[in-house]
Length: 269
Image (cartoon, rainbow, N blue to C red):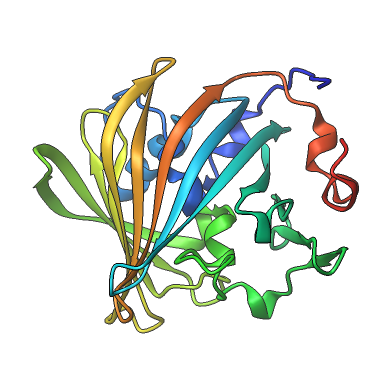
């Protein structure tokens, strides 16, 4: 596997909101914060890996406890302050070699493509599909993408203790013109580690709770705080997706060829 080192532009990254699916990558370096935006900027600033590789066990669990599992690998690469992410499904056999690519943009919505082996072709994810389920999980396609921090207003709604951790409760309300899938997002951020411990996602009017994301088992990996387990629960159906981080590596050389539609189609970088 050919690999090349990449550098990150921290100034551009400061304007981006971490994709929900990869929120477990958040790094912690405690810094003083005043406002809701300050806190979220520090959460973003603390995500300073030039690249990462993760091996994940994904479990889909319905309201009756029926469970199906997948093995997923994700690679991320930051180039010029923008993030590219490739998600590879390795198991089970019926979805093996499914590949999903997200490329972050500054001047328009992020680009997303998916390769389904059964169709043998790459398909772009249309804007109308962004609120749809990603591969049958409780994550939307939009959750797989970064958002612009300037597209929301932030307030510190209070402070609460969660799982023994003192947390800020930060409420974000997306602007009317944004392409957010949610009307309100409430985050619990650990005051010591700046790891996001819990997130609530509300519908367009900001009143009805749609989904809840929780983190379990925070630990340090290569000096960075990460969550061993991330759970996304859909409230109405009581269906949940559990991500268990089996292995993670940060700041490793990764061939940029993985982050192309050619790799999606051929499986070769």
